[in-house]
Amino acid sequence: MLKHWRELFGTVQSAVSGSTETENHRLQLATAVLLIEIMQSDAGASEIEVATVERSLRERFDLSADELASLMSLARARQEAAHDLHAFTSQLHAAFDASEKQRILEMFWQVAYADGKLDDHEHHLMRKLGDLLHVGHAAFISTKLRAAATQKSRE
Image (cartoon, rainbow, N blue to C red):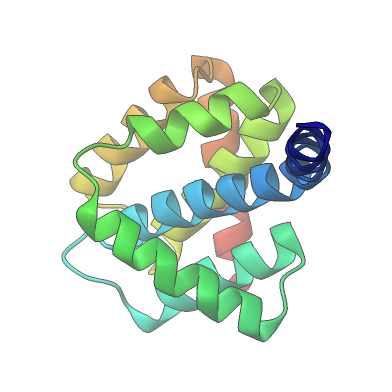
């Protein structure tokens, strides 16, 4: 009986110590799924949009090439199987404060603007994501303007 409790306690301890890493992976996956959704919202993904998604994820989460490839593969599968965005946005909303959600939203805008144009589907999706992340209108517009300025400076 004592052995059983030790094993159980050891399992709980490793679950607690690994929970931060697991949480980080969940947030990375949620972010990647949403970036892919934005990338594909305008009739397909251009090479520049794919590159922008990959650069954003690599920089934001400090990922190696192998980690990025694994994350992208898993995120594509999850995005294709997803019925809505709430499961992903709710994770980000619960984990991040207002300023961090604005940084994530700015990443989203950068993908939307990556191909040099913002179509109606992208704009609608961005509005929906801003609402699901509970980002206020002023912050929503601010992130949009910063991303647009960043895009213009890259052109």
